[in-house]
Length: 113
Length: 112
Image (cartoon, rainbow over the protein chains, first blue to last red):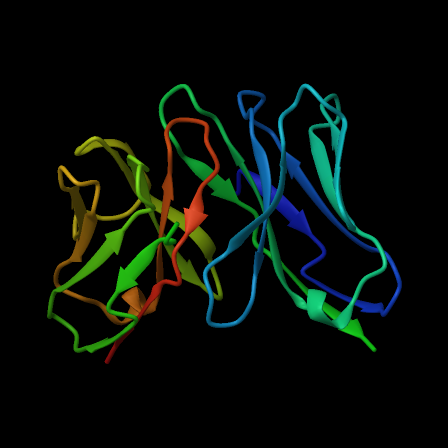
């Protein structure tokens, strides 16, 4: 059972455009929602993260929007660049019993020059 | 500060063999988690160790085991390797519960 559902599976965006990746979850006990970026041959790298007490968090060109009632969160990449071409994973965790992160299946983003 | 390191980076084994992978977390991090990444299944949680104790375990068979040492370094062992164990094995460390996880580059295991 996929605890975190991610869409789309792949995304092609023109340079300068906005890339949007969506995730949904069911477990209301999740209290931490990070996004990771992974380049081929590398481990995932933390991009940005949010906790459910805020609805939006922005860091540079990257923004997380969080909708607690809908149990959804999304990553927006503004002014997308070819260097953003990578696989993006959303994740969720619940901390009381330790660190157990559940990952989405990933979105392969290609930014066309 | 040095990042998470994993050794070896690449491994080729044959079915039935066993393998041990190593992970050195970021200095000061006490939590180490292991993940298996495959194209079909994505990132799947194997287990988490904190202060030498396994705190969480994913849904993997008993052939997958791990341990953590007093210096927080961790090892993962897979016994009786199967073809389906071919994957990228990722280690992630964090300061503690509910903290950000930082991933290593992974060990790519190929089982022939």
